[in-house]
Image (tube, rainbow, N blue to C red; front, side):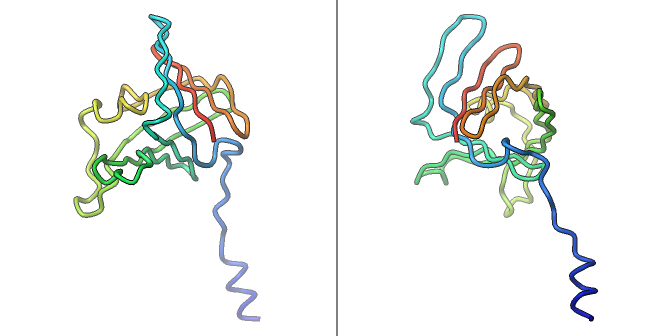
Length: 138
């Protein structure tokens, strides 16, 4: 009886992110004003969504030379807003990102970035803002 009471009091966190959840590789970045496209797949820049957090990191064996970041995000079926980026560095108490330059390789150009979700399938994510289109794959 006691075990039943304990189990019923536990609440499992359920993600409402649907197809957005998971690990995404940034494959290319299109600059809308010029029409130029940069293939960035070999840079192994990843976006990983879980719960209400987004981790941005370089997924190589040498990633320790490149900081990774944690952001909060909010999404709807047609939009994604990324906010409150911090360095994922427990030794330094996870300091807030102040210089946006460190996030630019990931296609994020402001400390509060708003994207339109152009495409979201189980294997493809396309995000667009006024300047860039980001193409990601799972």
